[in-house]
Every structure is written in C-alpha cells, then in structure tokens.
Image (cartoon, rainbow, N blue to C red; front, side):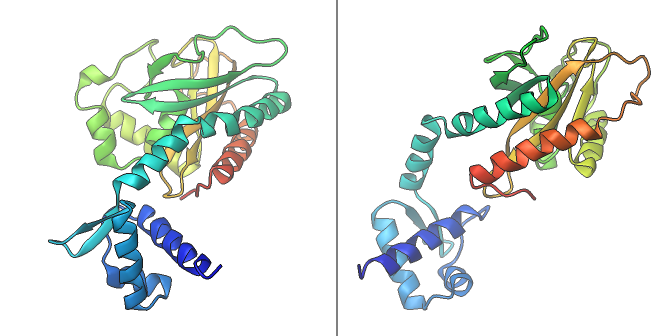
Length: 257
C-alpha cells in the first residue's frame, strides 16, 4: 500500500500534462501540484522510463509520451463516446419527439456516428456514416465555433471548401466566422434549410477534459421558413439539446469552456 501515494502523484502529473497545450517544466509541475522538486523529478524519471512522459532536454520541459497516446487510442477504439451517448440520445428523442444525432468533424465535413429516431421517424439525408459539409450543419458549426481561428482557416483555405446543398449557408470564410462568432456567443448552433429544404437542426458541442470540442449533439425536425434569418424561437429545443450535451461532456470527463 505504500506505493499508492506515488501512483496518485504520477497520475496527477499525467493529468496536468494532458491539460496543457505544450510541454511543461518540472518546476511548474512541482509548484502546481504542491510537490517537492526531488519527488517531481523522481516521478518524471519513472514515467519517462515507462514512456508515459517525454523529456525535451533542449527546452528543459516534459510532455506526454507515446504510452499515453497508446492508452488514449485504446480508449477510443472501445467507442466510449458512442456507448455513453446512445442512451442519452434515446432519452433526448423521447423528450423532444424528433431525430437526434451524434457527429464529429472529419476534415471539413461532419461525420454522423449515431442516429436515434422517434416512433414516427422523419426521412432525413443524415444517417450513420454519412458525411456532410461541416459549415452547413448545426453540429459541424457547433464544433467549429469553439476551434481556434487558425484551425478553422486551415479547414477552409479557399472558396472550394464551401460546398453548397441549397441556397443557404455561409459562402466565404468571413461569413462563416461571423456565424461562428454569433453561435459561440449564444452557446448553440442552428441551421434552417442549409442541408435539406423544409428541415432545421439545433446543436450543442461536446467537450473533452481540455475544453476542446470533440463532437456535437443535434436534433433535426421538419420546419420551413421563407425569411432569413428565421424568426422561430429555437431556445426551448436548444435547452434540451444543451442538457444532453452537458451530461455527455460530464460522463466522458470533459469540461466546457
């Protein structure tokens, strides 16, 4: 049992490294974790030997090692996000009576991983495995809205990246940024006829432990509006989607910004 405190401290080191965008010095680790420097260096040496930590001598800093990456990859291979999301999506469908989806970014497209439908499903183009232009889908924009601007620019480097399905939706990077800024401020995303005329969707992002958007939950329903922007009040539906998204974020150990 004497090794348990050391194990907890080692895990604390890994958790702290995982929350940082770049390598961290041993002094910073010791200070933020409240550990003696000698203990910190001993932990780092053990973790480095096990390949969970990588030492960067030139920078005198430490980052996560290949073993940490292998563990993360193994975790993802067991589909935890989909397994945890499925029952929550079913509950969401029961509450709102419309189709619900879980989607992730795949380049500049939105890839649908799960689709749950009510007793009387409405025919949609969205289905498991389908990919659609991310800037047109509510789920895609919910994720894009919380990515750094350089990341968004890299996904849409030219006009060729702005594929269209209807006459609606952003057609330039500047227009997309304006939409993302508004939806980030509001907290949720909405598209009305951008994918299929006569249908609208509301979405909210899912975050990982580092506040990074990794997926989004959306609800799609029949709706047609001639005015742009639509005057419909989507906030009650958005509140239901948000509740589910926050709960999934919590279950995967994530944290919203």
